[in-house]
Length: 381
Image: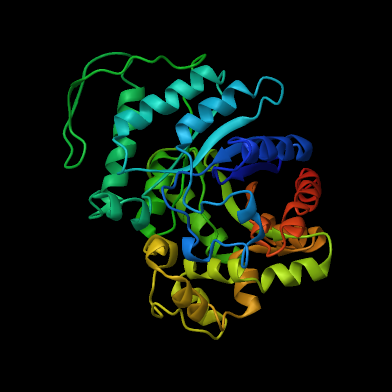
């Protein structure tokens, strides 16, 4: 059985007093927990509505006052690479859009990071979400087709060895294009593909080194989709077991059950469930306020929701829904939840500690110790 590994995801948000405060905290947390990798997100707006980002609801706003003040990921990863000499963690973007950035630029950014980090770059990539595209004038039509063409373009450029590349594509045609950043000691960044739907799963099988979904699904669904990814890899002439099984998880944790309960019932935690698809709400006897068939994060535009609307939407969110959408509980409880995912094929868990949305800033900040405990215990899986 493959060794179980972990990563830590940083939201990359601006902080008062020191603009890299959160980055330094996440790096220290990852090192203390023995994590293999450190990640940053690629978002323009936050996934939480900025209208509830106030001390009356979310404690950490005293340090991070701008919900949508999220740093550009490749710039941030370059900064983290310079701080990574001792830790030697791998560095990833989790995940970048296939369409908002031209794939040639993405190929250049990832190859640059791979050189400057001495071969430790990871390119996490997916279709993206509406919120990062449509409000900024980016075409949101045919996101899966754009994703497939973007990946094919990146691979073509990386494999070109400096030769001119001409490639027909409805979305990203190449005409005598040149790409000449060499591999680092014969390697390119691993490609981690965020995929959930059937077509995306087939694309992950063809192109991905690692399948890397968010986890708006159940562990048994994860196993079935992993089988689909590996079947697609086999159909493409690849070794199906060469595609590793990973996932990113949002975590709500605390040392005491009372802290966890208060966090689970908070405005911030319940607002997170607006990112869950309607089918997940239905499983918990509730209806998504945007409709039973709402796609969740894929289609949510949170900055358009004012505070009264958000508070109305989340009034009847059941605690069980929060607990399915996030890994929630004391370290013992979170480990038990991840054990079920491991038993269904997971071999790499990237954890994003969202416990700072606790209404009490002290409780939110103290959640880092439980997360370190979780990371250390996962190394023994």
